[in-house]
Image (cartoon, rainbow, N blue to C red; front, side, top):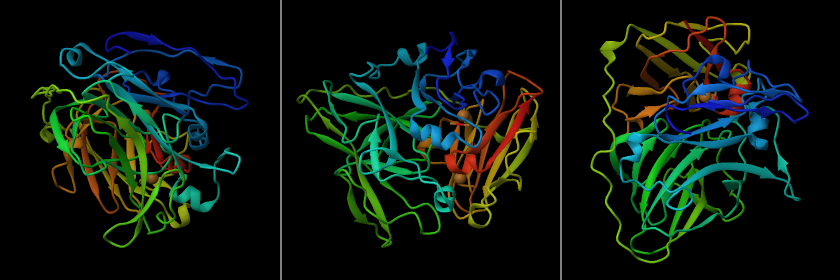
Length: 408
Ligand code: C2O
Ligand code: CU
Ligand code: CU
């Protein structure tokens, strides 16, 4: 998509069950959002249309079926979206799709002996989220990329249901972080590891000028209660123990084979001009407390479980607000808000890390932590049709860690 154009989709549901298609990261009319209220019945067509208002970046679409997003995304109803714009085109960044600019959709799956997908149900899977023992990148195991250029841009989407990843290059080599969910950062940051929770995206540029092969790997930190680690992953995975002695899993994500050595152009000193978020603009603060209850039985936000018939928040259009998200549970939750790209003010009062200095639509809130974001809904009012905010661990979303807001 290109910023400024109007797009229309025709989505035919040929599944034997209802489905929805949500445009994650986009500002659009609630009727086009593709959330739980835009159900496409079996055999029906849905034709949403919207103007692309987003900055150039990597976005995605996925199922948002009420109480059924987890299994549908797991089965394949998810894919990336590139948005381009003039501002980014003016910069000399790798942008030749499939050549020096590639998407990496990272997903874990559980397979039976014949290679069929297993979607585990039951209390443990619902509470911890569904995590697989095989890694897939763009639907492929053991992915290899034969590079032709001296710089390679990776647009990484954590499209997993529940697994968090900490990406790095083998040998601890640096990567240049250039973008977060909602587009370019103000400048590139040299990083050696990159954490992404489900729903989050980031873009990095790798220097291949030495002509040496590179391997992108990821370990998967435990999330909560010490119950999620353990077990090695199959298919090229290496078991490891971290310093704390708890087991972590390291997975191979992508092998990159450069064609040969060549000189690489440096990145532009400035990528975008971003205005730092100013909390004094805010007219009000809304607080959201995420909680899980005992044994995953009470997934909730502000004590309420998702109810399709309840509008939890009414948000006036055009007014700056601070949304303060607190986590009362023992697990980290990636909190996602529809119809907006927000800026992070602070994380427990501390300045956010580089990935959180740009625009975001999904933000991790660690146990006992509080994150404040600044946002404003600029148009698209509808007093009746709500947007969602929710945890992007899909099993938590399906179990009710979600709420509804209208923009009025
Ligand atoms: Cu990526 Cu409400 O979803
Ligand atoms: Cu979304
Ligand atoms: Cu959660």
